[in-house]
Image (cartoon, rainbow, N blue to C red; front, side, top):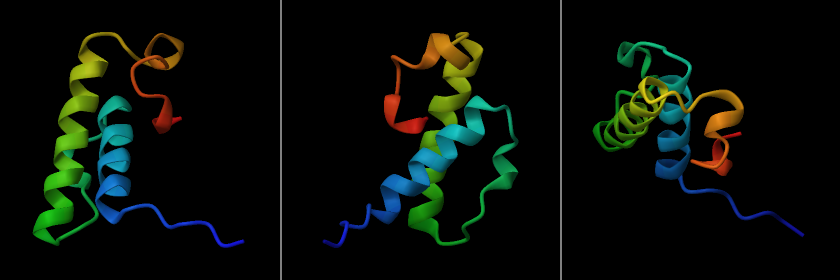
Length: 68
C-alpha cells in the first residue's frame, strides 16, 4: 500500500523548525519559492524561540514530537 505524501508546506515548516532549534542561520533556507520560504521561516522562528526557552534535546520532546 502506498503511503500518502506529506504536504510540502508541512515538510518545509518541520525542516525550518529543526534548523531553528539547532541554531542554524535563517539564511540557510533551501527554497526560493515564496510560499515554501514563508513556512520554513515560520518553523525557524518557532524553533529559535524554543531554543532560547531551553526546549532542546529531551526537554523539548513534549513540545513537538513530529520533529524528532
